[in-house]
Length: 116
Length: 114
Image (cartoon, rainbow over all chains, first blue to last red; front, side, top):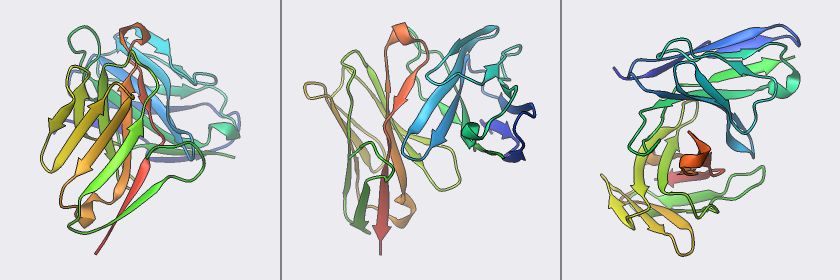
């Protein structure tokens, strides 16, 4: 089954304790990205990757890191989490279409992170 | 339709009626648009897409209309069913110069009543 898998689904952590949210896709997609979803603000892009070893900042990258060592995996790293990073996080992937990205994005089930 | 603010706009329809959800976009360079459905506790799910060289596209029970002149997008759901209750987002691709960037609207909550 084609899917994007995120882990963990729920996470409660303390301020300053490094954490990693994993994302894996089995569709051989070139593009992967991370979004956070907050009430009233909708989905906002954190980082994206156009291919292996190619990553770039989205709209709200502060406090986050990513890596793309393999095509299927795109982990999101919070080196020193803070309460304002409490949010619902989604990983997404898609094919690269003709003349750039022109295809739908497949989303994971989400990771609800609470930083206390 | 889509809007900013803490509360999502809500559209309430009776089962069997048609639903129309609206979305305004601002970037005239956007050339690809997608509608997503998000059920409670789940990630956004693709419904239908449309490219800027089209003004209408139909899927199963859904139709997307694109009016580039006024930068407006709509999603029509025919014979709305209880399973259609969800939050619906429009998303625009901001163009090749922005890399992989989908800009999402804030969402509209669709409530289907029996």
